[in-house]
Image (cartoon, rainbow, N blue to C red; front, side):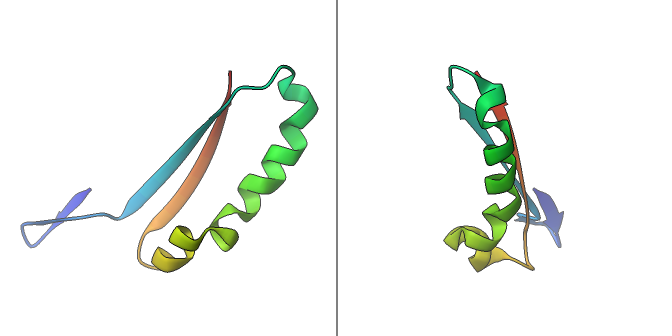
Length: 61
């Protein structure tokens, strides 16, 4: 968050997914493709697109 004229404003959102999978290498390519299209398919991301930057990341556990 940043201040704009003394008011807190959300400029960026970072979404971090934690995926529990037995073999991350088996799904890594699929997950990468899904994350690439996330902003264009997520209703929330589409609603704030242009006003708030949305980034994604994944952690395999």
